[in-house]
Image (cartoon, rainbow, N blue to C red):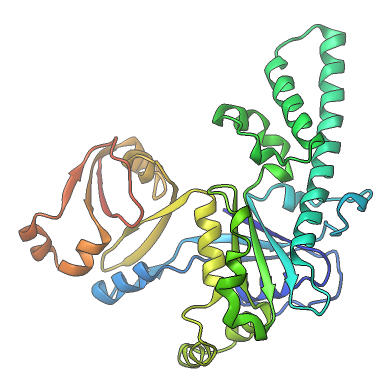
Length: 350
């Protein structure tokens, strides 16, 4: 999974990147550099399994995060803007909006950034349609008729200032246009970057954005980028004390990462043993046989069965003997739909 961070200048997007990635990239330098990091998806289930099993290695699911230049935040007045290939290639976008400065207008900034993406996609589609309709007229080739029809629907939506993700394309239609990497087709997490003084009102602020939340399309998280960045340099004990002093139960960046993960319809299944406890990322709805390919293609190819126990049952029972005695280990076939948090042992033969 690849997440791109966007935001107008001085919104705190590089600060948020630093907080998520544990890095110290200079902020406010307006450089054209792309900052990248592989970050772990926080998962307390992995931690708990590791406590029980005491493996030699612990491996969390990972995502690629990058902070790339590209959007001005000027909305419809943005003019000609060059967007990096990194942003176009992202699976989802995290939009950081300023809610901490004296003249902050977070909702207006959010709309301006969306308007800017709409303009960029509209320009992209206009160029694509011009090339494809010209080709059809000159050659008589109608093989892309369906694609042209979908692009025209997207164009009409953008002309009405509606993001492509909002027009209800079918999965097959999404697949046809996926290679064009439209910005407004991507799921969006709005990260409202507040000042330290507003931390006690974080839930109230999040509730004020409830109208934009749409499962699989848009989510909202409220955080204080400055505080989150300070947490990075603390050890576990000091971090816990710092959060307690602020009245925060968990780092907001953990919430941002987890919401981004869920926004893309991803889940984790778990494997455990003396060698390793590990979380594996798959799309929601994967069968046991397809899920096995996350570990190795041989498992999918030679799948025999999956031995499955729920995370809660594993934590309660803990030992193979207790699990067997309670009858909580299920034998599932290739068509079983894997649930988030399933602890699985695959049996296969190639």
